[in-house]
Image (cartoon, rainbow, N blue to C red; front, side, top):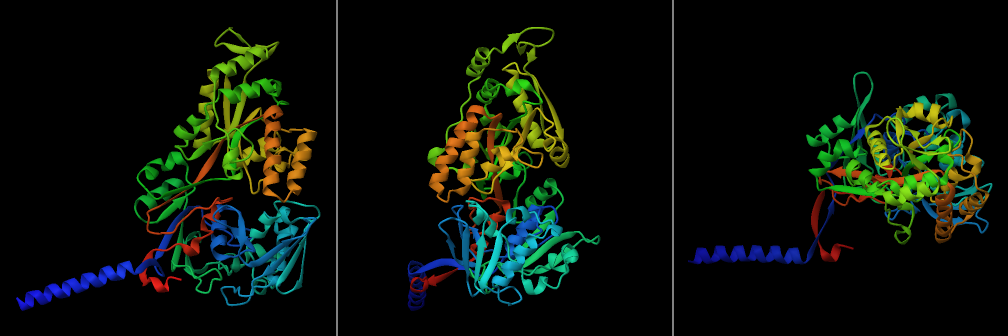
Length: 544
């Protein structure tokens, strides 16, 4: 009896201590573990001023720091910068640097590194994809911790430029300009970001298979909890999804909903956020005068059931859209429901004189000697071809026959879009800032190198677009943008369809993973130093 009572007392004591510890302690993130992500495509440049592909940019975001970085709410916050001051005329931006930033080789990051990075970006011989963004901007450094940017004219979206990763001048300065693209530092990169390159695994033909990164213990925003992060590269979506299904990787992203729907359906850990993109139908009335009739544009927009596209084809990973700015760039209060009404669309066409005519074959709509039909051009991707086919089916109910043609993306951009050689184009616009409507709709952008592909021209809209670019207040820009959107709805040859989601799917091994309102896929790593796998309990008095 004594032994039994003693055992019971010991058990009670253990239980009491356990409960006491649980009540007076908190589970927190602990260091350790490995996280593996699969990506389509092999990297070429782990270099912030040369990176072009999503794979390049993902590695750059992990390895390098920048003056500003994306916050969870989609705004920009400080990274290497300690403060940012904007002059009253919005032409001068003064940035103060933190004094505790170190590159992975322990060298200090200062103003010289920022000056060098921007100088290299502006070099025409390097063909940096970011060169245009820095054109005509002067940069000086009055002291090692201060950088002054001077703009030729106010530009509300300039702060987006400050998300450019910073190169270590002491390593890159000796590299000749004509050897810049061939430097070993494009592979064995040295930055000041949350992770540093540990090793690169390649195929026998030299193609990268994976990068192994280790946490940078003295990272200025806090040591990352996950010790090892591995990026594995796959040549197509099929192999990427297969690797995820077999457990070879812990997370994947940027796959088409049609290809990944089965994988999506079997996982609970799916994060989504609207991408800064908007897909629509862009018409060229020069190629087809019937599309110059605004009644035709309005009727097609009214007839299209966008929810079929977003729900059936894109499996719910998109948002119906009938405005010029993507979902993530407008406040929730200004978002409008997108409805369709086939009968109303018929009435619009009838009132505009597009009468139904029965001749040889199917009935068509005619106005004078014009027949209402057009060719729809798009990229030869399964997703966009499915959407084009759905649009053709829906418009057949409006008695508008269309022909679909498709091209590889490079051919489409060079031979079709630049040449403005299309009647109706199913394509997407990508935004970095809410002032970017200027690039797509200002009359100065109508040339072959511009993005105003419908060649829209309205002096009143031009004035509003110019004012948006110069306005620093987000609320004021919102008001101006709404006026621009209203005007485009009245006279632009465009039908907006949907905003797609960025989808990040994981097996749940990593905790604390959140998706900010990203502007590009690499920004999924904006808070990666706070992701964790392991946990531990600590007394509540130590949680601060």
